[in-house]
Length: 113
Image (cartoon, rainbow, N blue to C red; front, side, top):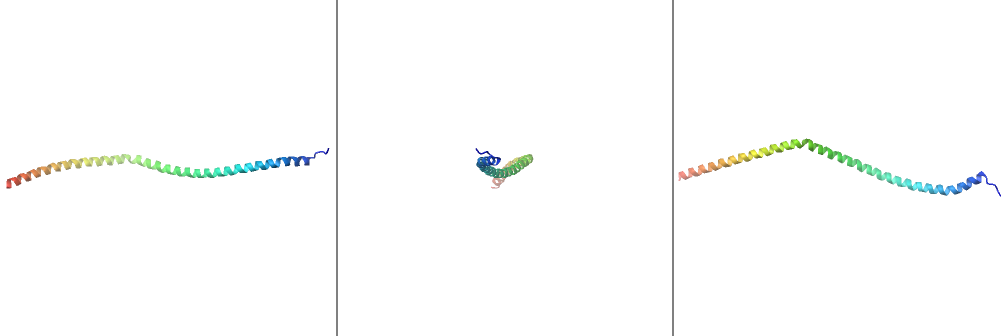
C-alpha cells in the first residue's frame, strides 16, 4: 500500500475542511447582515430617543416655568378677585344711591303736581 505523504494529508484535510469553512463563512455572512440591519434599527432608535430627550427637556422647562410663575399668577388672580369684590361693592353702593335719588325725584315730582 502506498504511504500517505504530508501533501496527501493536507489535501485530504483541505477537501474535508473547505466545504465546512465555506458553510461557516456563509453563516457568518448571514449573521453579519443581521447585525448590520440591527445596527440600522438601533441608529433609528437612538435618533428617536434623542428627539424624545429634546422634547422631554422642553416639557421640563415649561413645567419649571409654570412652577416658578404659579405664585405670580395666583397673586394676580387674588388682585383680580379683590378688584371684582370692590367693583361689586361700589356697584351696590351706586345702586342704593340711585334708588334714593329716584325716590327723591318722585317726591319732588309729586309735590310739583
